[in-house]
Length: 548
Image (cartoon, rainbow, N blue to C red; front, side, top):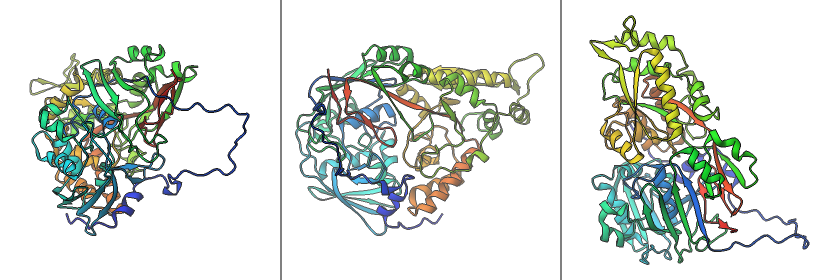
């Protein structure tokens, strides 16, 4: 495939977003603002207290290059900063720790000019040498996640103490967007790398963010304390200095009912709401309910193409046709969602609007026909199909999350009607990721959030099988060419065309079976002030303070 040269990157990236950039992010001045002196004054933010955040899944490791877990990214985003940031309203890319950046005409070289007033939690200055050390770590064994986010990175050159140049073998479409992630792309504190090395850094992290690591009680909580010297918040925050609360406690409560009970009892300040408990908080006098869109599918069935019999596309298609998504949505999330027709969500740039024409609808007769065609016959008087003396029994590996479990049990029942036996095995997230990477599974249910269709490279490219996020172990040369086009072409329309073709191919070949997208809600206790979310549901915490 001949890959195209880069157009002007700054323009190309801005065109990626579906919201109009004319909305802007600069604050507007209201010349007619009401200044009635009789109005009650607004409370000023106060320091102190512990902000308690309820979480369903625990982080696996707090090393930016060794995890793809959303739970880990959330924690690391509180402890780190990114080179770039995004306008919370439009998604437009803006400078952050890099005050300025330049992109070479051929798109293969990007130079960043760093702020000179930033320090790590250890007190050491953040400079280009620290970034060089952080980014060069992606060459180390076990750092495949970090490598995927930096694509064809070829060289890291320190021009001077606060100037860093990255050189790529090919133009890398999602680079600037990736570099807005304070979780996955923060600089690692060299003093901690010296003391702990990469193997132990993930339990002893340190970076430049408003919160510094304090304690991790496995299975219970992670505690972060305020970094008193912090003074480089993203431009859209009102608070330009250290955070207001003394500490953040991320409390892990796996079971939905227990977590929701803790929320209602006032033991948690902010928490995502399980959809089964939505009515409890809709009109609750002590909580504000915040709704947002997720840039990803919440539930997808992954097929392991390396495992027999799922290497047969007829079986994968049969399982896709045998899935009653509406019934799953009603049972798993109380009807608060919609079927996912494709592998990208409608809110993501590059989504193919006509993907529903290729989507699998619930057709159990068609599913049975494909199973028969593949040689899996249902003997008279038996419940499970057989072929050459083997029963059609598959292992579904999932986390014990209640929503995932309800989805799994619905699939188990639906596939049983087709004569397919499903065994459900549950593991905590870190162990599940390890097993998926090793290909121990037949099936798995995994949701995701992402910002760019380059996600398709990470989950479908052959080179990512077993080392990246290609847990379906897809090895498809045509798909490789399509996702390479998304990754290495920067002309917006060409990238879109590659993305649309990749979405069609993924569905036609049943590389995945998308299940649903669910509504997303956050409950915020009345004692919390200043909380907000951005256009994709990211929690914005730096203006938060507690009234109690």
